[in-house]
Image (tube, rainbow, N blue to C red):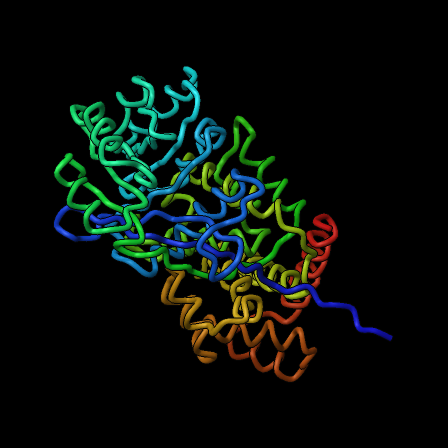
Length: 417
């Protein structure tokens, strides 16, 4: 009998970043570009909205790991995503919202871009086919992006003659030789991007697969007009992939948080509900484009988290936070889920010292609770008894909480299939 093919527990994603240089040869920022395969210099894009969302959710955090986080990150958004408010899921201090408008812009797009600009996002308008953008767009632009490919010197002069008086930066893309740089600088160009400076560098990352229904529930939750922190917290907690990426995202230096994240609720308070909702919309839409089933490790993570959370709620770990224990239990399997070393993963998450020590040190306070969970999973009665005695936990309460957790995790997994 042929063995069934096992679904991988992660999805690969590919993003390229290309540096943007200023007139003194320093890197001003990077543009993130979608790639559907590693090693390719161009992407075959079937759905531009999904490609943008992949770049904005997976790519942003990945790119921040490999560059000075003060550098600007430019992402090309579709008109639909701008109207949906998708850029608001990213920090305005470093985000450049790029858009290429081929037709005269409508009033809704102008208002959406103006609103983003007022919120301190930089707006980059790209010329199309040598045509200067509409006046309404030029009035909003922080950056005008000019495609130099195939342009004669006279054509470039004509473009710069039109946009030169506009109070914004001028960025030349597809610059492929020194002669072009010298001409563009003389015309008043501020920023440069192209193979003459550097080819895009492909990045690859891995993120957990998760189910479709859980994503729909997150979308359903955050779109409720009276949604509160508690409701959002519960929907996020049910999805390890979203939790991991949210923590990774918040660890970006672009946010500048000086504190360690203690729980999902703490993460929500740090980012704020408004920005979190925009980020979740992007992350969920990407995942909805990926087919997958609920893996066993996913259910085990939910079970561990719920068991430890309920122990706190039942007064067996009175000094600990139930949200922190849920996060700890769920992340205790993250190494197996992602198939990468734990120390590499933890380096991407702004976790509290207690959670980190619990994952690495079995003799720490959290580590002992993890040993208790593992003993329960292995039905090791003598170990369960010894650990309960050592930590002053009632064995009957442990049995009840574990039974409830198994039922809850099973119910969640069934609902998400």
